[in-house]
Image (cartoon, rainbow, N blue to C red):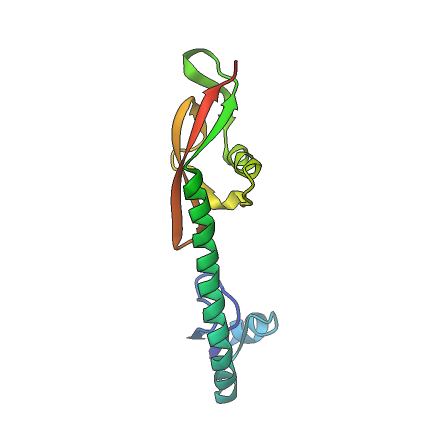
Length: 150
């Protein structure tokens, strides 16, 4: 059975994509949940008009993500003060929440899901590379500098 997806569905596709699925999956799940409609001539023609709006929305999301990434790139480095024991090891660790909190203190609003720690939690003093990824196509690296508390 051919359907048009109305929302992004894992392993099926993005909105607007015409795909073939088993009829039971379409009738019992996708269509009643409002995630898809039947792909007949009338629905295809009406959805083509909506497709332009969806493409523009997609482009605007990417542009918004790029502007947010540029703001983070301008900051370049964030300093976090933490208690340190012997050998330069931190008591506990610096995680995503700490980084988000430090960025929010600078006046930028970000979500913790947008921060990636390539080497895991930060457990030593010094500079660490962290990735800010507001969109799957937009990615920026910045530095988190951890300094000891007196």
